[in-house]
Amino acid sequence: MELDGIRESLKKLLKESRYLHCAGVEEVACDMALLHGCDMEKARIAGILHDCAKYLTGQQLLEECGKYRIPVTDIERKCPHLLHAKVGALYAQIKYGVKDEEIINAVTYHTTGRPAMGLLEKIIFTADYIEPCRKPLPRIWEIREMAYSDLDKAVEMVLENMLNYLQESGGDIDTLTLETYRYYRNKNMSR
Ligand SMILES: [Fe+2]
Ligand SMILES: [Fe+2]
Image (cartoon, rainbow, N blue to C red):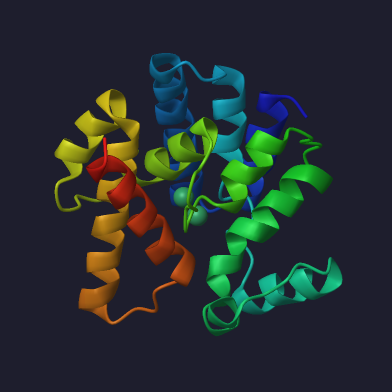
């Protein structure tokens, strides 16, 4: 599906604030792609689609995973909203006709990240955190600046913020988020 068609579909499915967030991620991801030498069209598609399953309830997300045989981890069973990333990647394929593996991976890993992410994955992961509709977060301007100059460092900073927030709020930490943080911290330290 073309970008315009995707946008129209998402406008109907998502609540307005969520749609504006997706449009923000699309724009920021496109800018970052230009700067870091990534395909801008792919960045737009991954950006607008990354939360395309966010309108489903936790129960509905679990049902979709059952129906399409998507593996669910213990933490995802406990916090089913995390599954909007995996189900979003499924919908990108079956509803919007996305075949590109880089786009599919960028949607799949946009909440947790994963060690050794590809360029588009890192762009979507970071753009999701820094897009302009986000309410003020600690060090946000520092991270925004880093997103355009040193992407691996920006990824580490986003993960550090996420882990700090989860620790303070008593939220569950996905082991993949922790693994990803350790990977990028070590990678950035050893260069
Ligand atoms: Fe998301
Ligand atoms: Fe998002």
